[in-house]
Image (tube, rainbow, N blue to C red; front, side, top):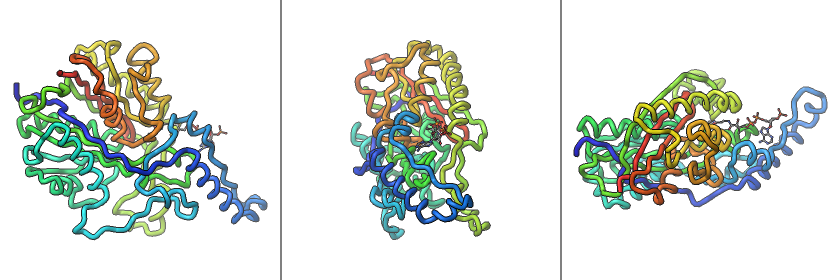
Length: 374
Ligand code: COA
């Protein structure tokens, strides 16, 4: 059988450092105390609003997040900095986003003994690229010793599933036999660590998915039964950072140049968009949604995942049916559903059907139905 796309392997890079909710809130509340003290007179005169403290209980209850991995813990927790910091690297050195993408990709290749020379293409699919060009994917391609081609693609939290469909289409059309979809997500760079409503949301990670033609894939792979992508424009998750900011120097560093969201609206609008996208696609593929063995959902909020999985499965999903990695990783944007798949798929049996599903800014949603081959 040729031109039949399958998932051959996945890889994961997890930064060593991690921040607990307790550490995060302690630092945030120190920033709030200092800000309110520095502006005490204006606050007392009613000219300024005081900042409100954050709370561990709120974060855990509202999101399910208990900790997040980051690439630079110390500056993020420093109340005077509250942002990641590292040395700028010379052009000759591998850039930091490529470095973590390469680490995840190497794991995916090594797990199945795939020689980089036999990979045809690299897609770097992530929410934030380190620079506009040369493409991150081409730097990753070069570092791995892959011939062929690479390019970047960004569909925010849905980047990885959109990348998987793109890779699958290359296999279906015969344009490639082996495609790496790499999602390095250094989300700590776009997060506003001084914003109480969202400072707890994101974490850093990188994932890789090796999509191949069944003809060359290892026996122990996942058949891709079908993929479905959907986008609907919304301003409720937005980041205005970009190269044209220099045209407006007076607003260059304002908070809208980082991640901003209307979390409540996102919750209310995305759940009704995603659940029918999944069930319609299941029906198209002749899959009984109630028979889905496991759902590897986008990891943004445990409440959202509870609602979506309930609507699809027809009952409250057990952790076995809808595993979470939110507690230790936080929201890792496009990498979340891939981490869940990477960590919680080995135990499934031949013939079991599962669903990788992403959703987020755009709005965007992507589904990848898979079946364990052996
Ligand atoms: N600590 C303590 N209290 C906080 C807080 C914090 N860090 N942040 C907000 N609050 C307070 C608010 O001020 C508000 O108080 P009020 O009721 O007195 O007005 C209350 O908690 C509820 O705030 P709200 O923003 O409505 O919380 P929520 O229950 O909607 O949870 C999110 C917030 C972001 C966790 C949730 O909306 C969410 O996850 N939405 C989906 C987000 C998503 O998927 N985004 C995609 C990103 S890719």
